[in-house]
Amino acid sequence: MLPSALLAGVCLAELISPEPLDIGFLLGAIPPLAVLAHGPVATAVLGALVVVVLTVPVFDLNDPGSTDLLTVCFVSVLSVLLSYVRSRRDAQLVTERAVAEVAQRAVVPLLPDRVGPVRCAGLYRAAQRGTLVGGDFFDVRAGPFGVRAVMGDVQGHGLSAVATVASLLGAFREAVLDQPDPEAVAARLDRRLAVDSAGDPHAELFATAVLLDFSADARVVRIVACGQAGPLLLRDGRAVELDVEPCTPLGLGLAEVAPPRVVSVPLRAGDRLFLASDGVTEARDTHGVFYPLTERLPGLAAENPAALAERVWTDLVRHCPDVQDDVTMLVLAPRPRDGADGAGGAGGA
Image (cartoon, rainbow, N blue to C red; front, side):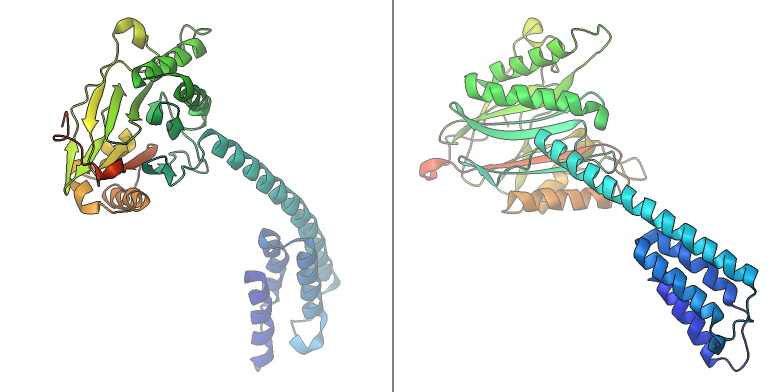
């Protein structure tokens, strides 16, 4: 609205002033300003109105000479040309952004509200501005062996890590269909990274990840942690760190070093599993204090998994306004069938 407001302001000031005002030079800024927001037609109209205002006697703008009028006309024509180029460029950028968004959503699609007996919600904030995908990833899939979830972090972040993320998620989605246990899924992901880096001896391609395998009745979850801490268990108003010992990160020969340790955790109705990337746990405030996720989580708990993730994100930004790393959260709320509360306590808690 600035070009139109400036034109109207100059005209109004000249009409109500008892003496001529030497403010006609302001009109020369209107066509260039119009380039920033208007198309070529609107820019041409504003340029023509500037010429009219300069030449109509009622405004008494000190009778500009022919040189001044020719200068304004030249600037107006040039502004129309620039506006046309800018409009074409903007249209191209909109198209490219739409294509990029579709491609990134194909890599990390939005999670459904429920996968089998498990309610789920994910939150992803990429460190690189203007992108939807970075170095973190998560997914929840149902297969013939139950519902399985993964959350991890590949080496590096930003667009350079997208290819590795796509490769790992593709391997995970295939493994869900034909691998009978979570350790076999972890071995598949490990092999995928090993194959991808085989052509480059200096690739040093690796990733950390947590795999969760829910039983068919959602009464038990089996967890495998590869170079990353396990999930937090929200139960009875408390956040409990599960005793899940991380094994070797993916891509470093997991199967050859040692088989991963699988921890089984019985689940009750109302339990929620919360997974967060190091962008959450390693975020620091201006005094260097880490974000206290375990302490804050019970007070932020919500019935809706998506609401829980959003509350943690809001609290995280309040603690550390300048988040520099990819931030990923995955909330899983299994609903055991037959109202079962699970036997015993929180397993390895």
